[in-house]
Image (cartoon, rainbow, N blue to C red; front, top):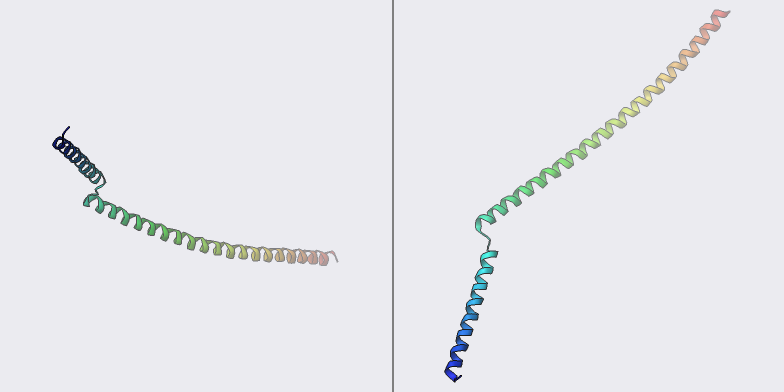
Length: 108
């Protein structure tokens, strides 16, 4: 192999390596390239997700407020029930005392 053949073979090998590198680069960019339509779709989906999270947070806040209201209302109702039961117990006791007093008077 003389000097000119060596240079030509080396040039061909380098050209083939360059072509393979360029093709590999083109393939990588082709598969990883994001289209503008896809970016718009991703932005729309991100906006919808953000709105859904805000709606969820509002729903959670509403449910917590409603739960606090109902807990307060339940506590008030239980207090009123306890007061009514105490009043009924006192009224029954008083009625029993009056019956006993009336029976005592009728026996005389």
